[in-house]
Length: 392
Image (cartoon, rainbow, N blue to C red; front, side, top):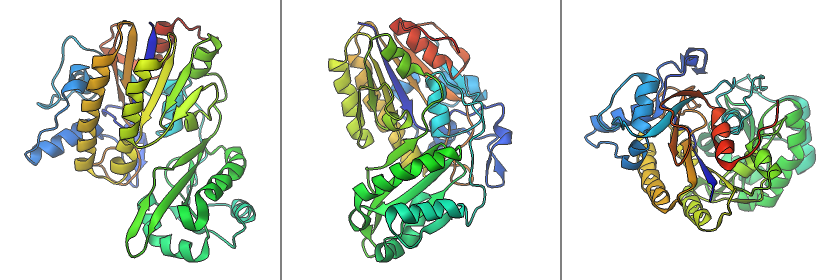
């Protein structure tokens, strides 16, 4: 039974990107950033070694050594593991760029970014939001991290119902709104109707960021985030699998990233929910299936918030979960564990970091142990499934 389980550890970078000096968090370049290595160093200095036995058995430590040229006692080299170091050719260090390249489509064009730190959005976009949502204005209109801007404007939003709109160094337009005061369906409707105008600007995503709580008890983002991404301009791995007659199953935000194009089903939830779903798909996915999963909480809960201890605990939890997956795989299954970009929680700023990523392989496939283009992941998956890759 030939199946591919393609698992993306969102933001779990391993440093070494040759162009990292051209990317910045504020005034600090990404040169030297290394998400996993720096977490391991941070934890060891505090007397608590990072424990990733399964990921290291799959070659994570070996990939880090190849990428960054550094050995770490908690990231040992595994001589027999099948691994690669994925280098992105896409210009962005963002979710669509990384995932589209994993699926075989490098993003060689420039996204549009809202570069002004304050008063970030054009008047016509603000007016369109007001028209769609039937509100008198917006809050925010600047670069910000999600939790901080909700803390800043949450009470004003509750009092006025004006949506909180913000962006970052990524090509995104984010809208935060209270699930009960503003309404979850109303937020989704606003983002869906706004997204064509945002995509026409060549901005990659509109993101609905629902939250709950109160000023007195504290604000908290809920699990009901939804991304409204541009459609890939040409075919990708999910399209190729469907064209060959295979099934495509999405877990996490994969469905949003590819706008559900040629995806048979998509399940969402917390990362713990998604790990259970990944296990279930081992039980029922048909021969010829692609199971494409994203675990986002490394990035959303710990990378952007610059929380290395939380990130370390999340990695260790994932390591335990993926070990269960490994034990239950069938003989002809191929497991690919990779990442879409970095987000070093010890680095300056709050944005992603430009890094190479691990490509950890378990199953009958080419033995690599070297650097590859990140788009080669789609080639490996297609070859395993016997899927034809169309000419560019």
